Length: 451
Image (cartoon, rainbow, N blue to C red; front, side, top):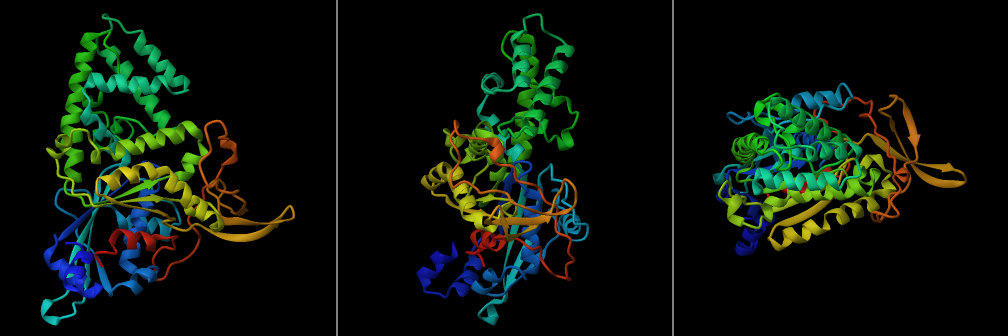
């Protein structure tokens, strides 16, 4: 039972209401954290854990709630643990960004606070964070389609792209005939498609399936992945690819991916709004389509279709735009407005489904400072930080964030070229959390009703 409902029913103080609620709630709250590669998911999860463990940069949270202690618990049986200790060492001691995660991993945190009444004992609950690659989450859309339907949909998407490599692949498919059979054709088409989607991902396209073609993890070189979207010109080739596609959907998407998603109550969706802005209308549109696919499990046309595999009890979705430190603090209001614009459609749809939604811009690790400087006779907001490209400290003027996304006709990619920075060169005291922007607001919006 949510804390606010309990408080209303029994007229309890908020702190006491939370403690009584914990006696009647499930012992573990599952929170899925998803985001496409380059959205900053690994650093976000690392910072989130670090803030909760040390709390010295969560003053707004600790002031608003009773004191609590957070403990990192041993991993669950037979699941991969998110490697917090390695990642935090990389950020704090080596001042380097960690490599992104490429598989599902879990983190267990136990929260403990003092009860009002000693006979009740301390109030405790556990939060399980599930690190879930967005590329794999896109594969949930494959549950809706047969191999033939997926091929038609994917080929239609490729035909609509203004990309020469996509055109070349479609031409290869159009040249197939009933004589196109055998392992050589299978390998050639699979290789061409895998190379294509890998390059499209590098070119900032998002709506790509299967996700394991980009992030194979433990399935690297598995013959099950040896398929590609084609037309029906070669029935024998279709039959072979269909068998592998069906095996992938049944054993990987249903058997592995959904298993980790069972029973989660909250979801964090990380978005790289800056990437969307920098790479033009086509990539922005594709990123929104990818986001729609990621959220499709809440709005499936056949509700029983997904419910027969797992029972989503989702109550809250938090949309987070990362990398707020790449723009000056004076531009954060526009940054937040862009995030709101990007997800407004999805927020309405989720609200209709009785799912609470919120938004937040953050920097999981603040790598720049905003300074005021005169340039060409004007007082402008610059960002100061260590550039990735040369490892040197620079003062850069990143320009102004627009208050809304440009139209297709007016979008000029050259207007937006935000730089990437390294973690700051600084030493941390024992128990000092990462410096951030708005991670305290993330904690409040995600967990405030539980504290």
